[in-house]
Image (cartoon, rainbow, N blue to C red; front, top):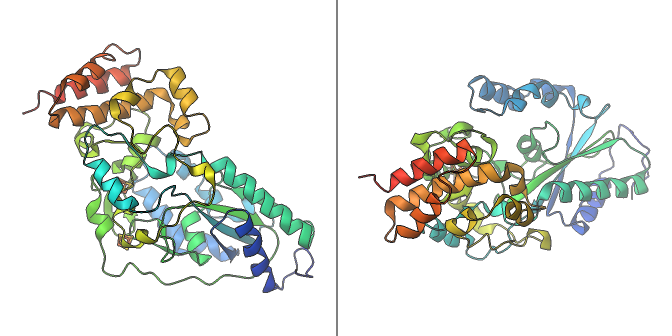
Length: 369
Ligand code: SF4
Ligand code: SF4
């Protein structure tokens, strides 16, 4: 344990080992520390983010624009913030051959493919609770400190902070990537006003690989390390509220909630690790569900089945919209079209105009030449 006082300006190197020990006990798979300074506001990462926003690549996610001043200034999130502790938490329930299994699911048009991270319990509250436990361990050992746990709940540039914390590098698919863990993990942050020893960043190991860029079904990458979110299936199925642009619908295939393709083809993801917590076990058979079954869920069933899941956030209407697109794509190539047509027809008069219009589009796919 450190004998340092709260807010001392000389970090104790042994603090990092203590933090890593506590974090491992709490189910985190990696931990690193970034000292915070005024330099951050002028950093390349903040400049890049501003450039990305100015090109409109964030689509309807206007909160990213509104929160940009906070993103550039950690003091605004926690007065006197001096360090951020970044953590990773692995989420793959079944890591063996996962890339192969997901590729096979995408090739089955009537299968509903839900992004792997969303098949278990929602990670936000779970990780925030565990970060709060980590903060309690720090306070117990080192004395009072200001702190704030953030899991997608505050405007931070998490990937850049995690890169600086030595937890990996930013892959060409824009996500954090590590040689030991691939990219199938969640990120969390604990801001603190305590000065902590810095972790060392590691080198980029993408090399000449471009697998993620060419695998994207909707051509969402403008170039390496740059994503046009407006074309990304994760954005279209989760963040985007209205009509899904028609030219993109056929490219979405059977991906009905998020998309893992750019991670699935990444060679480093053969080293992705198994989740250490049972919370991420697959619920509702979402690793092998079919479109027709999920499309039959009424609003009450949707609510009950997805209680405690990230999927609940999109609501029943967007869920049906996404499934209708998947069913339309299945109808275009189906050997046995009758059950797909019947499922779609059952919602042709749905109360939601959004659902109705996507169902109409889907039914028309059966007539496509
Ligand atoms: S998540 Fe899917 S759609 Fe989005 S960039 Fe990756 S491969 Fe493309
Ligand atoms: S697929 Fe290749 S280029 Fe893309 S993130 Fe992985 S290693 Fe980097």
